[in-house]
Length: 110
Length: 121
Image 1 (cartoon, each protein chain N blue to C red):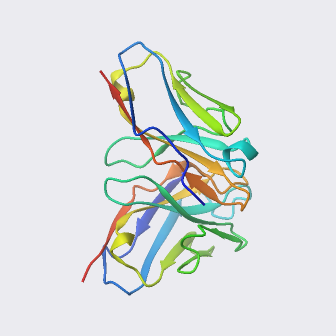
Image 2: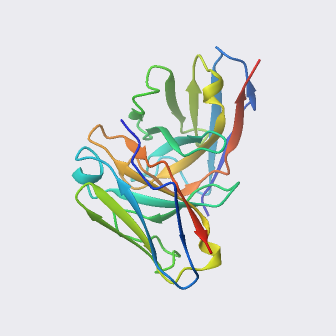
């Protein structure tokens, strides 16, 4: 299974909105509504932000939202804050009942 | 509050076997909807899913590691374990254990803090 494709980096100013894409195939992202997003600060374990494409776990800010179109899923962060500067990873369920991650995206808040 | 804690050697020699254990506290590993998994992250790189196990013993592995990996569960100790054989330098990584999302192999909302395993002679 090949890793999902994410941009290496994105940036935005405080208050703006940014979107991170996650592109796969019909065997993973496009085939199931089981896409998750994680936030990982340096030296820390990843934290689940979004599951099942667009659902937020309890306690996650509603500034984080997810969507999917075809083989590409997206994470949108609105009202960008300095604390959002972090690394973001997507993951998807696959036809082999396995999990595949994206390469990760570093978000810089300018 | 559910907690997961990885344990095991921090240094493994090339060609030997990497063995790690994840101890779950604050909840039962036999909690029906949940699977339990291992994920790793080489220094400065992205996440790689290793595999997942259900308390019944059903396992799912990353195809690229399948020939070298095995995950097992010990319900009496509320633990699950990872074995990776014939390790090479590229297996050097922070290894995380995590509870999966309900009925899924995707990692969920509870992760261990991670443990660095270095493969070196």
